[in-house]
Structure formats: structure tokens, C-alpha cells
Amino acid sequence: MRKNLLVGSLLSSWTVAFLLFAGCQSGPKTESGVELIREGKIVYKLTYPQFEEDNIFTSMFPREMAFKFKDDNTVNELKTSMAVFSTSLLANNKEKKVTHLVRIANKYSGLEMDSIEIMKEYGKKPDGMKITPTDSTKEIAGYKCHHAFVTFEGDTSKNFSIFYTNDIGIKDPNWCTPFYEISGVLMEARVNKFNIDMHMIATAVVAEEYPAEDFMITKEYQPITVQEMADIFQSF
Image 1 (spheres, one colour):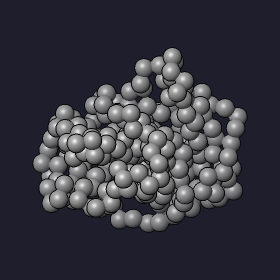
Image 2 (tube, one colour):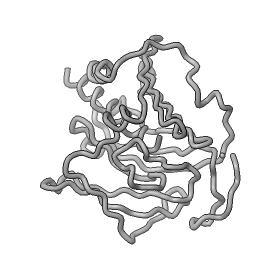
Image 3 (spheres, rainbow, N blue to C red):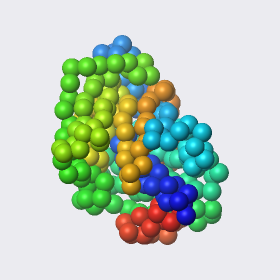
């Protein structure tokens, strides 16, 4: 039972993570000294700091997340280590719509949300959360990244740092997340859901071309509600 609860919690964290980061066109040089990419992929390394590296529960959790972007649309697909479960999230920035697909075995379920629904379910800041940019910078995956400190009033144990870059060509990349006031692409962040922490940091940014179909729904799925989606994550 504990095993299922932990997996369900992590799957919920992955959903939030997708939204955090939700042309192969070359652009002008950026402050990082690289050409601006408007189409490509960001690869993130995932770790779970509250667990030991060889923890039996985290052994089945994913260690990498790939995030593709094109024309301000994004798609992210992630599988558990046993590939029984997979989830993908497609975000259309122009239409302000998000579709979240979940596959268990051969069954697909999907949740469609408009801008109001996505902000209510995923974009609202937790109570007491404050984001304070600083002057600190560091390089991540070859990009100059700016620092911001995330604090929580009354509970300093929840505080953490994020790093973001303005040198990747995605418009309003955080529009549907609690980090909406950050205009750059998050390169390092932490997600907490049901008291499970997941840390992510970009390891590579690759300029690649993708067909438009990669950012469209191509699978038939059973429409579900927000509560039904939550039940899937909790019960898995």
C-alpha cells in the first residue's frame, strides 16, 4: 500500500513538472553566447532528495524527462521504469489549452483544460509562496541562468531556489504554473506534491525539428474529469 501511495504521489509531481517547463530555427546570439533556439528539446535529470539513492521505492521512478517545444507549443512524455504507465502533457500557448493524457497498459484517458481550469488546478500559487529574483547566476547545460528564491511564509523548510534562462525561444513558458511571473525557461527547480520532493535540472538543450503531429493528439482516449485524473494518480 505504501508503495502505491508513493508512486501515486510522484506521478502527481511529474504532472506539475510538465507544466513548469509546458523553432530547429536559429536566431540571434543570446547572453549565453549561443543562438536562440525556437524548436528543440530540453533534457532534465530527475532526483528525489528526500530518499536515499538506492531506495526501493525510487528505483522504479523515472530518472530523465524530455521536453519538446515548437511554435510556442510544448509536449512532454514520461514513462515509469516498467513502462506500464506513461503520461504526456500537450500545452498550446496560443489557445491557452492543455491536454493531459495518461496510459495504463493499453488504455488511454485524457483531461482537457482551458486557461481558467488550468490556472485553478495547477497554476495557483500555494498559500504564502513568494518568488524573489536575485542577482546570482550560474551556467546550466551551457546556458546562463538567473536565480530566484522561492519562500513560504511561516515554513522555511519549504524554501528552495530556481534557475531560469531567457535564451530559449519559448514565449511565456510558465503561463500555466505557479511560476507564471518568471518569464524565462526553468532550468532547475523543485516540485512537491503530497510531501514528495522531486528535483530537476537541465542537462542538455538540443536544436531539433519536429513534425506538427508531435504536438497534436493522435490517440483516441476516454475523456475524464480533474477528480478522475487525480484518482488515477492516487490509485496507481
